[in-house]
Image (cartoon, rainbow, N blue to C red; front, side):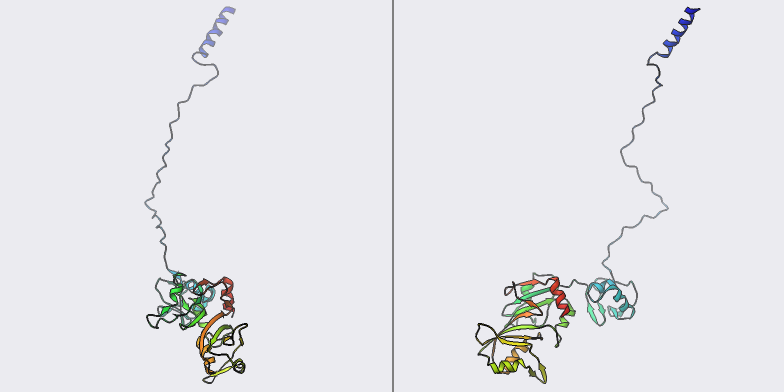
Length: 291
């Protein structure tokens, strides 16, 4: 009985361990390799693909006005609603109207552009004119600032070929208009060279003001220049008209040999040699707008 039982257990043990260790299950088949290529997107024929956005040069009218420096966008909306804005001669009251390249925008009676305002100060030399109507052989001040900016600038006021000194250029039409007015808060200082000594009595008369065609021109200050002959005079005025400077002394019988504008509305020739130019600083621009 014992022998039979033992042979039976031995037989069972050999069947379980045939070909592999006891306790392991049958191996699973190897997994198929996954493709490394990106999956193709499925296209739904019922959905229209979105078109790529095309950048447009059109600009909203209120932004165009704000970029020109005329006023803020909010104020521009008020002007538009009030009928004070025209595009190509037509009054526009539509909010959200877009201006196209080449359109002419008139804001409250004046044409405007969305250009960035630029300000260039030149120390003008002799024999350069500000007028484009002068003789062809006369050199123009634009030659001196041509490399400053591609923006079209205008001189603030005019200077004849013999006048030297500070000359401001800008595309800011408001500033040009402001400094063209006869009555201004800002002062300009000129150094004048005469053909003979200025008499002290004439200096006092000029200090009291000079009349031209029933108009009275007031002089802020006039004096001899220290350590210079009495032919060298400093005069401070509020007018930007250089011709008036010459007329003052000619009225008293003096010939003006030279006029040099050494200061303009707080701007000076410091570190600006004759014939050179520079851009105004942000603070200088703010100061000019305050004057």
